[in-house]
Image (spheres, rainbow, N blue to C red):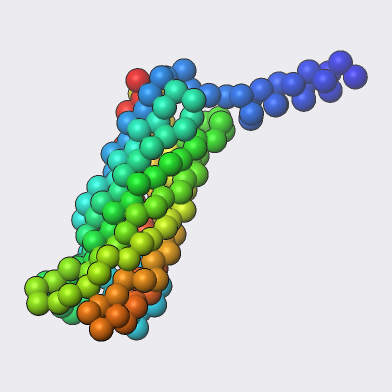
Length: 172
């Protein structure tokens, strides 16, 4: 009975209470792609921007995403996306697993067009692998809901989609 109790306590401490000894973590990443769910509205053709996150000592973090997605088969039309995020790093050993929520807006920008910003929300997850004690490399997946970007005629567009990214985190 003592062995079983010891095994349960050891397993629980590994899976539930395994945290980093670092005080802060700063993450910088880039979006790799943005795919609009309804390809009859628009198709993406490349993404550029940044994904930033700062983790506080108690596993909560704050972040900001800002990126532009070029719209396929257009000269100057692009979808701009801006989010403010809050995330939580799960206390899982070996990998860094993050779950987060974000709130922000999306807008279509181009010369000679008139669109209004629409509100957007996202949930995301990130999985990171430590490469040396102070750094980790991570991949992220974001699911974005944005259904109210409107043009001058008040036609609303569903620009919901999925974004992927890659980044580095520095722990100190």
